[in-house]
Length: 618
Image (tube, rainbow, N blue to C red):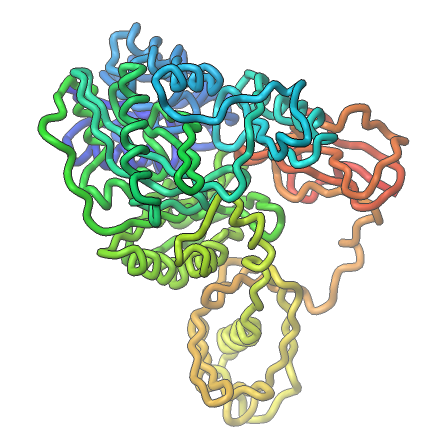
């Protein structure tokens, strides 16, 4: 029996595993980097062991340090979570050699699926349908579009869609460079790209005695940069017989590699056609939707299988529908740029919320930008979607910019509500989903709340005052509002102020009474779901940057610089010049105009803060 588990991971998944361990009276051990010294997973574990350093390479990717930590803390088992070393066969072997229980599949099964090219060969031999790889040197116009993919790793890294033959060579190089940086393996391959395909997967759990359970399907088609954003179970609107074929193929895949533990087999579905993509030999981020529909605890099943238990009988029957949305600290309108800073408040009441953060925690630059997973379960798909969208819309999220508004609009988009979505959903609709009009009265509510808070007389004076002006910035630009203190209280043109307190403003607008909850954190003001930054009355003329300056849009590391780029190089508008790596993603910095690179300050490996001057193009 397992008595103490070290989770070789951080954040949300570490907290998730600890929750099940506590329910089973199993002691918990966390590992943490210097950047995670005060992180939630470190605080909630029974014991925590420091991994010196801040970056993943120095810490969570150091298998020998994690095994040593487990032995030092007296753990007798290791759970890898997802990401980092979760699909590293050598790490699994090191855990077993140290005499610890590995809560995952056999190293040989991990190894079999580690290379996507090798996995396809095994699946083809087992009769699992798949897309045959293409010879990169033999790709023709007739083969387009094609997908370039990294042979190792996942999470969308080292993946490129190629629609023009002239772009293939450069995209192969770019994908290889990104894969080498992310996974230490620059091997890539090419396969046909299926337009309007759906990403559908099957959750499997297998024991060491030959039993394999297939827990239905999940649809994960809504993706940004080939990374999942919204997932649901079961996958809706599948053609007759397709779900049966998916479950059969997933079971065959697991049996082929003598799998044990929890895993996911991923497919691309187009009409009646089913194509094997890959097998993730670990727990998936989206596992909660399967747990909700089947009423199971997949982490508890992992622990049970690792202890040698048998899966007796049949898996439970599904009930209802579940939808999960990944809440990220990122700005979808700015090329999904990740955001950092203090998370002052995070509350999504009424539904399941899996997170690695609490109020007041800091969102740093070193790790994934996911704040939480919001999960709703209901008797029908329509009810689950409505419940999740409503919960997110009412959520209190004070801190860096998030994708919350995008999630709500995506869940309510006609293509999603009618289950006609596919993996290109955001390619078609991102612009519309990120250009919603701001609330025009949020800045006024912020100003009135501030005026009340500053007044010694509860917001009114004996004599009328001169009009007051406040300036704010939001994601939609700058706003200037005007109000006045009168004998009757605070007034604003065209709006009736029913009440104004420091935390609540009530306005009557065109005969409709509206409430505005107001919260302040420094120079940031949150009015309902609108985030505002207080601006000085007059702009600072020294804040202007020189024309042509390329500034870092986020804190991160300079991953690479365009081949041959030096001071004096001629560049075209839109040319990618510099790649920044932040929160496990690469972000292109492109030339703002056609001209000459007059300065280049960025150096590969350099850590930069947001707003740092990287280069100048004139």
